[in-house]
Image (cartoon, rainbow, N blue to C red; front, side, top):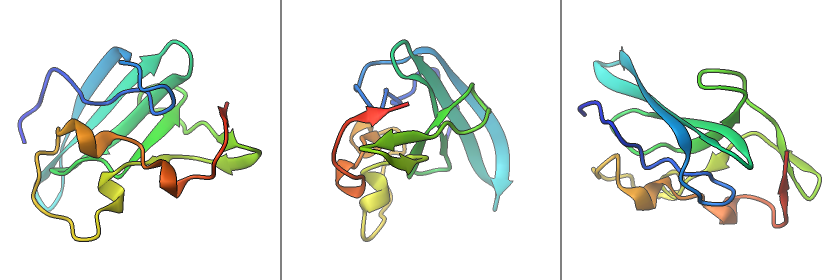
Length: 118
């Protein structure tokens, strides 16, 4: 997995492309697999980040800044800390392109219904 200049990461709330995107190589952290931190800022919903480890991310986190602390959000008053992705719902994970946009989409079926608020 070579480092990239563009990220498939979008705002998990409004699907808008993110500003100030960053892809930070974290090195071969586990079993020699290269890790990357992908982060970006939505003007309306703030910073988001995810980790890519040779496969698409399982979750997208709202954060205070890239590499910062997780921000809590609520959906109809229920606290949540991450947006699960379509990749997280795969029953039998297979080899796929870790940058395939469709696996980075939020799996809303795993979250309560309602409006997201920060």
